[in-house]
Length: 337
Image (cartoon, rainbow, N blue to C red):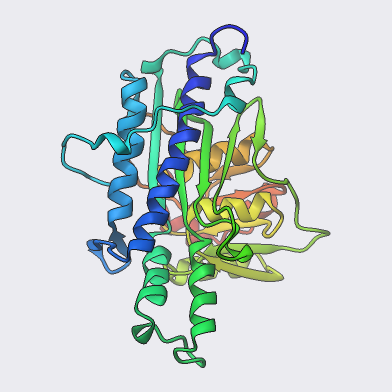
């Protein structure tokens, strides 16, 4: 490694390593069966022990190495001493070896804001845990409690789960990490679970094979658990050939960059900045776009409101087409920031 890497590169390399630590925490809590679930605002807004421990690990690890950065995490946790075994001191050598884009090479710690979602897809995570640990309570329509169906459903749900760490400068998402803790579950018990995707403006994105939906097919990915009439009307207006309903904002961006979907449409104020910062940075790094339903960019300064109140529209290509299809009723209902 030649010279001393730029601050933002070292921060991104640390975020990569700590996201893998957080992914391991997410897996271990699931395996233990002791999820420690609490409802934050209702049954569709849950927090688990995995959320709490993963956020502690991420925030404490990054703050220890970069004390002047601003970190905003999803979970409101009391100030307390973090156990030493939650601290991750490693850094991804792959990132440290990259040349920092010149526009970010002189950034200082205090200019950077980190947005953290320690467990994106908590609802899917808790549902999967129920299928795995309490199959008698987790019947699937039309199949009852068939063990093979329960296991298949649980594993599919776990594929929705991600850990998100986004880095912003000047209000713009410039770099991010998405860890998928249960990636490779299809390979069975001996699989090396998990993968980490990362990206940075001016460098590109890594850890996956970039693909596009073939031909002119319009495949829309949207929420599986937070739908309403506005969401449905907006999805229908895109005239999709297919609709994929999955959990997690990070997972939906993966759908886009791996060619499983051509647009992520969520006409609702339910998404937050920690859901979209890392996801947007990775998508933009490969030429995609993420905006609100009006086509306006979101900002990630430390003092912005956390809610993405005008919804989310994300695409790898042809963003203008999808933006032009958003119904007026949706635009009127979702006021731009």
